Amino acid sequence: EINSDDLDALIKLLTPQTFEAESNIITEGDVGDIMYILIDGVVDIIKTTIFGDKFVCATLNSSYHCMFGEMALLDKDKRSATVKAKTKCETLSIDSNSFDLFCKTHPVAGVCLLKFMNINLVRNIRTENDNLNPILRKMIKNNVNFYGIKEKNKLELLNINHFKDYQNIKRVMEEDYI
Image (cartoon, rainbow, N blue to C red; front, side, top):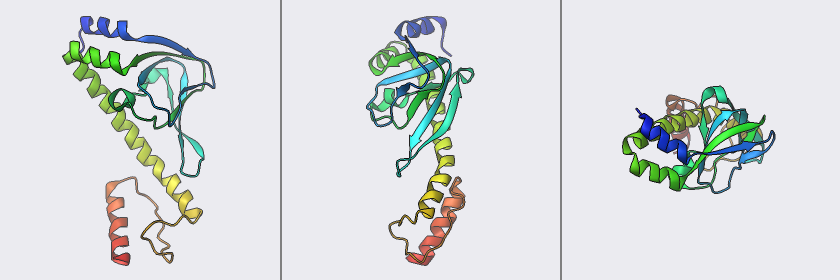
């Protein structure tokens, strides 16, 4: 658990930020190094398909006590989604340098925060997996050719949300094409 001294130190590193409705808090593809905690408001998490279509993969509100942009604290890479304020939003943010400093000076609390961030990331990955079905169905509907799959293959990818479904599809494809 995070003790009160650790929490006080963390609070000093957080920066309050306000975002008006319809403004992007994070833009997919931009390089980032800031994580946000949603204090008040509602945001949409928006992904772009390979066809350029944008779709809302999740809507988060402050009652979830959620954070977003946390991957940037770990890898400082390009943003994987756009986070758009659906309503006026109040956030607290922390940049990667401040977060690294906090973890070094408060290691027990740092581990707790990293565990919490990991849980959040795993939840997001599972949500992304659920979003693969409509994307793949659209690809099939638009006759996108998949490398290594013969055109005569009419295999409908009905459900690959679960590893066993992936294994079954892979097995069928290997039997037909190897």
